[in-house]
Length: 71
Image (cartoon, rainbow, N blue to C red; front, side, top):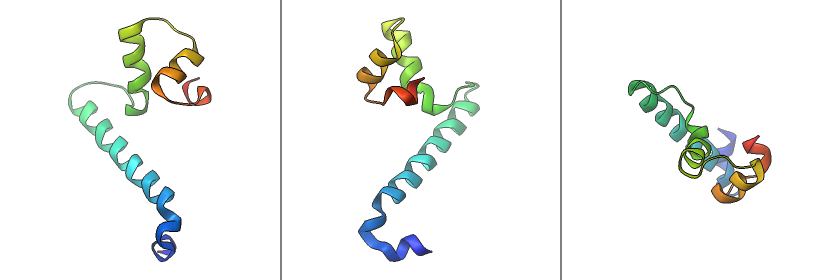
């Protein structure tokens, strides 16, 4: 595979692949528990559950994401 030949230059791509694999595992665990959510949304849903209503910007700042990924 091409990325394997790129050494540390491909580290971000490798981290992305690991991240997506972890999200897929979390989604499977949620499904097995009878919970119908995507793991990507957990931080937003948890924030809203704990803190209540907030703007997209407030949520993004608090969970460390870009506002575009929240909306």
